[in-house]
Image (cartoon, rainbow, N blue to C red; front, side, top):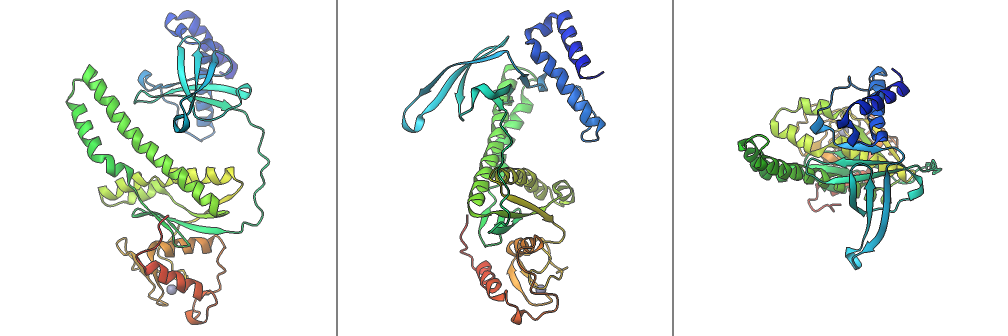
Length: 364
Ligand SMILES: [Zn+2]
């Protein structure tokens, strides 16, 4: 069946079945569109085979063109508490009171998506068509920085700044455990079960929101300062599977490197800046100065010490410098075998080496 036939099928089913008529007709058609897209992605090898979605997991509805109306846009509150509110009418569902947190050109809205989160919060997403931004990539980025990702320090920059890993999941884990245990003791689908389920979902959403907020703030900070990021091209899934202890695996999940990378890439792209993904092979074992591999480095070693040339530096800082070098930013003036004393880049590195050893490095 092609797209049109699928859409027609959805409409026919809606006509036959009273239950489906509580949906706006275009929303029904959009469900068919979603199935078509999922199938198409499967045929192109981009996704797994589409599965049947259970009703309680189908949490969003899309109004493609019509069926919604925004009215009564007003500003409430004063000073810090100033908010923009509006009333949204969705056909066959009813009225919603919205808090508009961003300006949007109403005449260019192409679709409206209503999304229900397991905690009961509802988000309404207005998709706006924007003309392709003509922002050009800055041709020769002036300031580049290498970014090493890690568990103890979430981010280490090659200029020595770092951000401790706040471990959002680990911090909420006690609360989540208590809620999960109390949920499992409630009678399935009872009123108390539902209440606990919502509280648990809220806790999980808090963790997720905390993370995204942090990542975007970090992205904006970095984008103010730098034109190019050299990130490692991590295989996070593989990393997690290789994780020996449960704690390590959990902390890897908690750090969500892929999400962090997506956020940074988005922020940088929006400003016409670049994020380079550099091969992550042996980044923490390679010596920044001589480029040889330190095989004996274990996960516990926080300080990198090169057995070949005697170079000593903080482990994460060394890795971020290696990343920057791989991105082609630090001139590889120090070739293998060169005596470190004659190298022109040494003063800077030495400075940084001293810097890395000092405990009081400025955190971000
Ligand atoms: Zn070395």
